[in-house]
Length: 197
Image 1: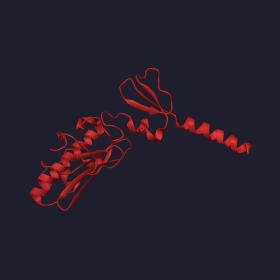
Image 2: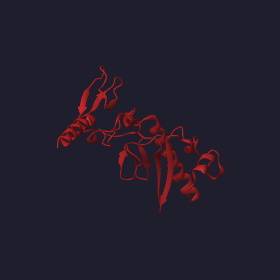
Image 3: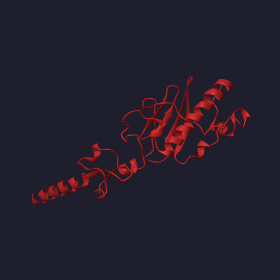
Image 4: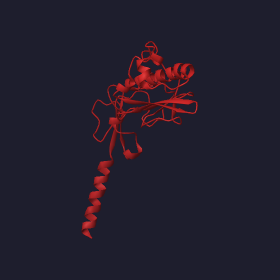
């Protein structure tokens, strides 16, 4: 009986120590999460009693600007709300979508593979992408045609990056993995400058 009590005490203390998480704002204004106490120069400090109900750990939030880690943002989410790697991926899916829709589907009546988008659509070197999306270390790009509906996805290769999706209706994002048509919208138009020739 005494062994059960001792084990219960160790489990109680072990669990409470394990569950303590700290949240603070660093000197650059970024929200951080850790199981270690925040540094003395932290702007706002707090203790999260149950980390399973809190935002993701700092490894997934590091460097994020504007976009809430949970997917629930405060106010509209624009292209500028994302990290530089995500902004580049948004430009890329925008450029792919534009080239596919305007030049491949409308002019050639077909879907162009990424190889052709890079080399030049229909053999025209001026109609293509400046950047080869297949070489992006952060994202894998996929095109899908269902009936007449075209969609482009940027699927993160690294943890902590938002999944991105674009179709005829809108661009969308998912901060925790691949994005779909049902995820949160990115407001405003996307800037594709610098990706297309």
